[in-house]
Amino acid sequence: VGSYETIHVERKGRTALLTLNRPEALNALNLQVMNEVVAATAELDRDPDVGCIVITGSPRAFAAGADIKEMRPRSYMDMYLSDWFAAWDRLGDLRTPTVAAVSGYALGGGCELAMLCDILLAADTAVFGQPEIKLGVIPGIGGSQRLTRAVGKAKAMEMCLTGRTIDAVEAEWAGLVSRVVPADELLAEALAVAETVAGMSLPVAMMAKEAVSRAFETTLAEGVRFERRLFHAVFATEDQKEGMAAFVDKRPPGFTHS
Ligand code: CO8
Image 1: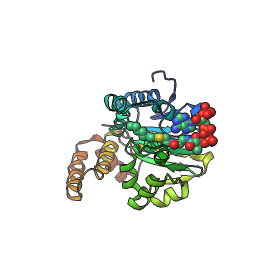
Image 2 (image 1 turned 90 degrees about the vertical axis):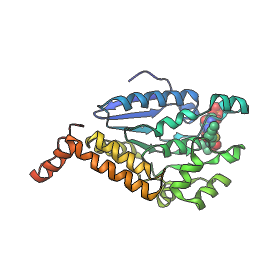
Image 3 (image 1 turned 60 degrees about the horizontal axis):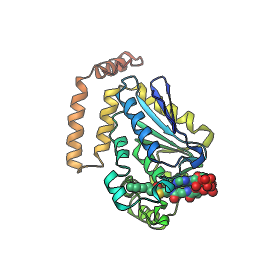
Image 4 (image 1 turned 30 degrees about the vertical axis):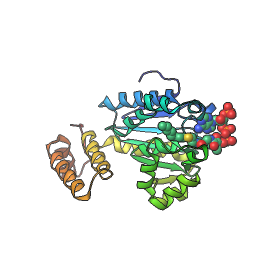
């Protein structure tokens, strides 16, 4: 995988681990981080030997938000003409499943980055929030939309209007994260989840991701119809034949990702 300055990327079998690495700024997301994360994940997404991508930070901070010092001098025209942070949307377009492993601060853009991932695992030290309002701004990487869909209007409105942060327990209770694990087990657990996903048929996992993601975009009737089309389509894969044959033969499946 290419060489980067603000992130570290390593491969572990069919899993890729992307670690944000700007410790001096608690992994604040500047343009370089964005460009590197977007480039690295796009490259991993094109690689058929990568079945799942884990994104993590440091024990202290997943990411403490967009880089305030970088944004501070910008004008409306700077932000508009450069379409500031629009490239983060490409993370949501990845076909390979992604896992966010969040320890410590996931604030502002950090919370938004975590919510752009498919599975969100939290350490018991995780702190989530959209504190932008305290800086005189609002979320800009989809936070007002994805947080509201995840936790509902009541909590999202309070968090975006007051900047109140929530801890891992409240985040799990509210449905923002799938699971909370002890901080020193977070990475191992995230890699285990990723390995499980990466062991499934890649095209079928892509379709499962696409189907669940569609629930955020459309009506129930259209979503169910979309799911049915994909469900029929999986019968065109080798992996459906293998998965069902393995069940009947009482042996583990050997998926060929085809
Ligand atoms: N940006 C830049 N630098 C940061 C950021 C940040 N978001 N967060 C922390 N840092 C830096 C600090 O400035 C400090 O640097 P230095 O040592 O040079 O002073 C270093 O990281 C360590 O931070 P602290 O000393 O503050 O550490 P503490 O443990 O005392 O506090 C906190 C940790 C509570 C996380 C604190 O750093 C904090 O409140 N950070 C800011 C959190 C925040 O407001 N995040 C939201 C940012 S705005 C945003 O994300 C908007 C996204 C949408 C933009 C869309 C545009 C289109």
